[in-house]
Length: 295
Image (cartoon, rainbow, N blue to C red; front, side, top):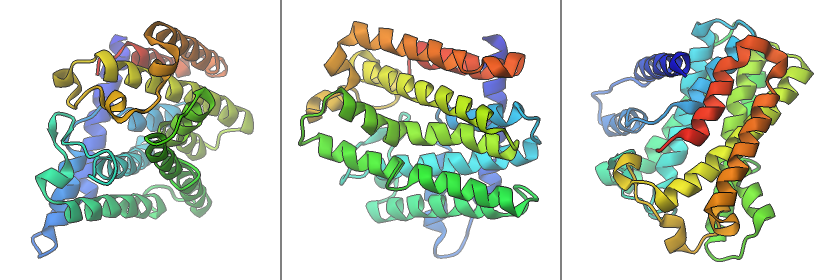
């Protein structure tokens, strides 16, 4: 895992450099929204989605100058979703990654605008010729991302999450919710790397299967950490789902069965990478990292 740790550190550094370059500082009267954007994207985080973009693109020898821009755009979208998820109208959280949430650091209106601006900027970055010299590739990226983050993906999953507070959800409903809310952008992160690399349909299908399993395993571990994780280490409050009366993988399966299911999903994910040989090692290590993490 030493190689993985070094690779993840490199991705974090490259992503944060790109984010600071792409989100300008402003001295005009609108400067507060730029401050909020930069505050939110630089608040820390594992940067797993950028890692998936870059590691997937590396399978096909894509230039890092291309994949790092796309990785930064994906992280902007992820951050936008977190800003809005933390709002009083959604999860009403006070802490994110151990720091005050964006709407508390600034105000609700600024937080909403910062999220909107990050989502919009992400598509500007993707559509720019600096990202890729092929207009078709850029168009394919926009289409893939739009599907992943809209009402049939991440936003739809957030809607289901709100409904879950007043409904009785079983395993099929929870699986669908998490596949949309969390899994859609994780899957998209692999798919955009494949698009950059002009991957075959078979290769894209296998990456899709890998990402689907990793996404569900990630959420199961998140549910476990919400129950028995350390709030200081996590940088956010725990037992939120229990207090909200939401069904989770842990509440439905129990902690032991939930962890066993996460391990099964991880094994399945790794099997889907066989076609990529040694080039898939970093993605294999990421799958293992997901279920071994403590935050």
